[in-house]
Image 1 (cartoon, one colour):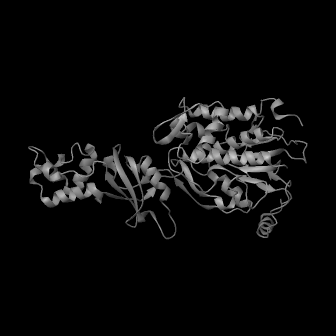
Image 2 (image 1 turned 60 degrees about the vertical axis):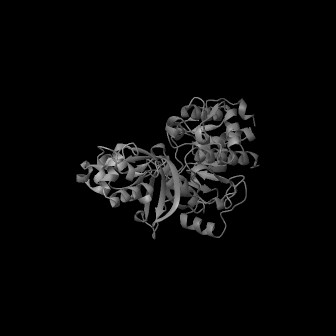
Length: 433
């Protein structure tokens, strides 16, 4: 077999893929990646580099690969973070693709051009350089172990009895026409359905006997009522997520208020800890807001000559946030009264709001369209950590968002995608099939 690098680089195909054979036990491909996103493209490059003679393909359901990458980080692409595991190897990998990087605050690392499109094009270019075939507009509807194409009930019975673990080399059949010796499921989660992320990987994993932990949107805004007058306000604060009145997580940063609730990086990070189930609903959750201004001597401010009660928090909080709290405490009619007429009890109530009494009950979370990532997925316990190989099905690998992992904002989730993809691709490249 000729070296992969000697092949032509015109290797991006549209849906009209025809059944082909690599001449190796009738396989169409040696390694087939389902999903042309972050994890999948990194895996394809690493596999082809590890073994240039392997025929590697990426199946992407969208008209072009790497579309979600192009949109990530508001178009800037926060590649990784200096606090994330393996970030140096992530940087080394991108250096081999010609991507220059820079570090910003909180360890966030971006391409020097601040262009997510450059990252996407570098990955696709890396695939092209290594002879990886990218087949677009081709959704993976079915994935079965070769020799197990019988009806679903019979297949499920075999998997339950352990029969799904057929000998190495049996391979997989995708959509009844593409045969691959090894397959990587890397088609993401459900966050960002406009980019083709609709949970296909979970369905494929289940069809091969894997379990899937309940899936939920994370790194998203949290919904609350009564926020209309605060829309557009930004407030530096500590946000605490309360479940049944007990703080279970906290984050500091800028809270962004919207008509339907709260957003901002600190709120999005808290969304990772919201779990809805049969015994827990959104009504059990609330966010306590502690403004960065902290304690202020309002009793002394009350004595400022000519100060109205409605201006008691002027220069302490953004104007509309101050009005919201004072109206909540004093009522609208009292705001025009002189501050010096406020009772000690009224001042104490306002101070209490600033120091932990500002609690916003939650009524929901923004859905998949606005979520950056998915929580839940294929349990990490069902995957070999060093190779990302399935513990249940020989020749099967998982990488990226299809796995039960979610990290905070700041490049952690993309780093996990690169890292798991690189491990899976390298391991598949080293595997003799």
